[in-house]
Length: 205
Image (tube, rainbow, N blue to C red):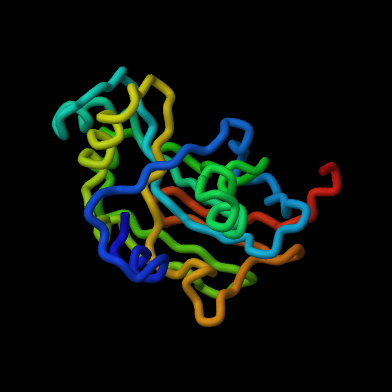
């Protein structure tokens, strides 16, 4: 949903938003650790603004979508890129491992934050800034993204839509720089606060 990330992902311009699902088992607290899956070697990060829905929404207009937003939080969309891109083309495979959808650290209502524009986003790995963007860089404004998703599935109260990430992901670096066990990922925004997560091997797998 950000032009700079689209360029680093596959070098192409984007005509429509991409949609994928994360399993509910991936949802966790921003205070929890990030699990490093068995056989993983391409674990990546993406800080995103996330939208929480308050009304049932189906085939909505942009205006209807805006009224259906309860508020916002942040999410770090963790991905195992090999599983995402090298095992049959289903992104869900790389994005649904346990701990890959941490949210927080706070919730801000739509009445306070408006349409979600102008929110700064930042992510660091071991103290090094990797992502530093702003929702002003979204190709499509948040209400338009929500309305778009409602064309393909009914949205229900409590559903969470994560809106995409600015540039700076590990896969986009030359050479790529993926997360390793022992890394510490810090992500957040002055508006929402900051989270700190350690990457640990999943020894229960």
